[in-house]
Amino acid sequence: MNEALAKALIAHELDKKRKTMTYQAEFPETEKCNKCGRVMPLMVLIMDEKGKIKDERPESVKVWPHDCVALAVYLCTEDGEAKVQWNQG
Image 1 (cartoon, rainbow, N blue to C red):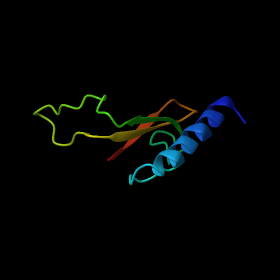
Image 2 (cartoon, helix red, strand yellow):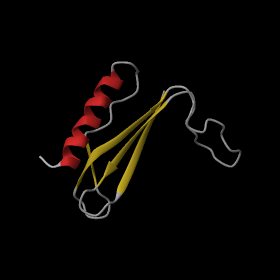
Image 3 (cartoon, rainbow, N blue to C red):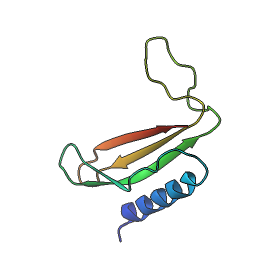
């Protein structure tokens, strides 16, 4: 197993543990790369339960995470394309 895939499995395991502490949906283990169509593993999971991610919504935006948020970053190990999903608590 390559190092990138091993780290992706760790991120997915962290997401499963996070799901036991919140009603947010679990992130999928993989996504499809929009650029090349290959499978993108979940590489990074960011959880913010204390509003440390900029929590003041600028007036010009309609959708903004607040209170608590989880971000899942997927990375194509072939071409470096990234994709992000987020859940709102």
